[in-house]
Amino acid sequence: MRLLVTGGAGFIGSNFCHYLAGERPDWRVTVLDKLTYAGRRENLEELESGKGLRFIQGDICRPEDVAGAMEDCDAVVNFAAETHVDRSIQDSADFVRTDMEGVRVLLEEFGNHGGGTFLQVSTDEVYGSVEKGRSGEDDLLRPTSPYSASKAGGELLAMSYWHTHRTPVVVARSSNNYGPRQYPEKLIPLFLTNAMDGQRLPLYGDGMNRRDWLYVEDNCRALLLLLEEGRPGRVYNVGAGQELTNLEVTEAILEAVGAPRDLVSFVDDRPGHDRRYALDVSRVSEELGWRPEVGFQEGLRRTAQWYMENREWWEEIKSGRFREYYQRMYSDRLRRAEQREEKEL
Ligand code: NAD
Ligand code: TYD
Image (cartoon, rainbow, N blue to C red; front, side, top):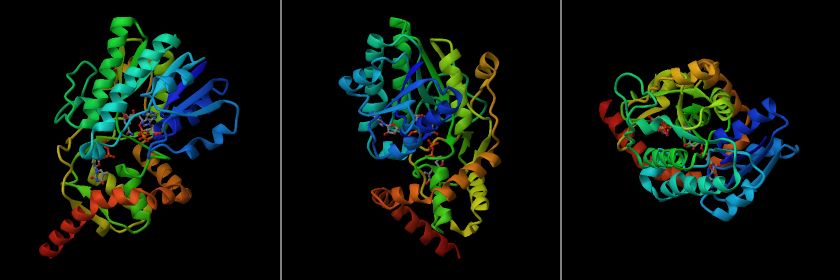
């Protein structure tokens, strides 16, 4: 198999490449990644020294970059995207460009080169907030953030290529992932690394929003199954069924790191913050026999250990342009939270 992995230098993409190197060592993998702020070439370092992985720096929105990378490839897994909801609230331009136009360019080029499956990696956020019950694959999509709206656009476009051109598209809608090499803007790595440094943990709103946390390796196992056995023209939910409030996640992080509870600050909420996501995963388990294997406690233990052992990886990020982002996102909110805390005393 010759596989194109787009966005392979990011969090899930790089974990997928590591997983493939163990599970399918004879596959030839090409990674196409633009290396935005979230893409880290060092995530693939060990793999690039072997023969199984070729890295190309390029943009999925540029047909010439995609055509070169896709040459000789039988199948595609598209991870490449702008992925952080908070950034999409500040500026949605790159989200629409990469998460929709990028998917269109990939699909067009795949029509000229491909043959195997086109696996579009999507998200449970396309359903929008679900107050009760669980989202099934045929439910209405009601995305609420520019991130989730552009991801919904990307997967709908991909599915339209199945209906119109019979491009063998499979869509995976995964829930919140966590694990090694996740960029420290997301909840779990941000709070883990802040707690390790004795910095405040800015919890949005009342901390009662709920997410279903999926250990990244469990997701990678599901994605490989979908690539090999998923039915073209079909959408599959992938979630662990481990629903936790953000406050529960925060408490588990404090315990894992041995940090005090008074680091937690309740800050102004994210605008339009979805209250809850929850997936019905019976399709992927009944059709393909997939089940999550790593419980939250064990997954968080492994994740915390990785961040403890790889301080240089995240310290380099956090001491670079991330500082400006953090300042812009959090400094006023943290100041206001402190003023509120003082008044309450
Ligand atoms: P990430 O932000 O860590 O990585 C994204 C990668 O895409 C980076 O390496 C970046 O350089 C690359 N990229 C961005 N724009 C590009 C472009 N125009 N051309 C080529 N490469 C580009 O993201 P992640 O968390 O690993 O998410 C991967 C995929 O999984 C995304 O499609 C995301 O929507 C989806 N997803 C993520 C989660 C999660 O919890 N992280 C959950 C469900 C679905
Ligand atoms: P995030 O990791 O950004 O993923 P998503 O918004 O895509 O689910 O956030 C997970 C949850 O944590 C979400 O409810 C927002 C919340 N959150 C905070 O409370 N504080 C933070 O600093 C961040 C980044 C997220």
